[in-house]
Length: 362
Image (cartoon, rainbow, N blue to C red; front, side, top):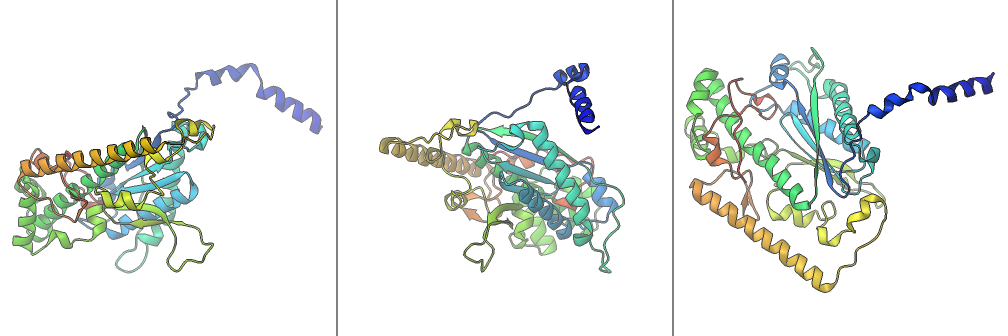
């Protein structure tokens, strides 16, 4: 009977109906590229309002998001780093990752589904009410996702800089917006009108002069977002393994990239471009090539510093935040702030539906 059943199963696996598999679209990611899977909360303005998130930032909600990202990194070892702000998280897969044969749809669906499941499971641990009891989850959260391939380390650096600049601009706007609403007594429409066309310096002045808030004293998690890297625990034993750890540091300046070359190695010191294809061939660079690569990297850094300096001179203002490597954290985008308002905020800092996202121009 067992043999007969096995025979039937085999015939079914190669039946005449198998042709339907030919309709599947092959979607492998380009080899030797960084794969970035970014998830984003869907309708989170409504979700955070329904569940009573605190404004402009809810530490409970941000730590909940961080815990889910840590769980995702533990599940998928090919993730080199993750960065999150508000209701979004980006997961950066190594260039040599072979996860799911680099199929974009499988990687993205696996990440977004696991993150969503962790969000629901971790909810009672982080989302506690004033009485100490978990807030009831009224309905399931939703996250959408996309996966993008980036060929160079410079692309990854610019990507993380883009997201951190977005975090700073959004948080500054929403900190000011909710101060006007919650402390200044303005309606949301009036606060939106008050901030229309303002620059970073204007918002800092409003916060300090009217509410006694020094934006530089705001928690780093609010201003810089959360970067998760694999780190050894404090007081770790000699054979201890690195674990995903949330950090709130600048990723725009040079210091981070100099100190974390174990995570993001300089491209000239890596392996051959065909490594992700499985060949394992190593590229031996001559002394002249290494010298040229170092010179090119230095020249690019100088050009970036020059562009940032020109942008600051044009804006005629200094963006708030810590300076590192000559780049203002969250800098850029000040001129663009005058074009409209924001609609994506650190969790509960979602503004009115009529608000528009401010663009950044690093």
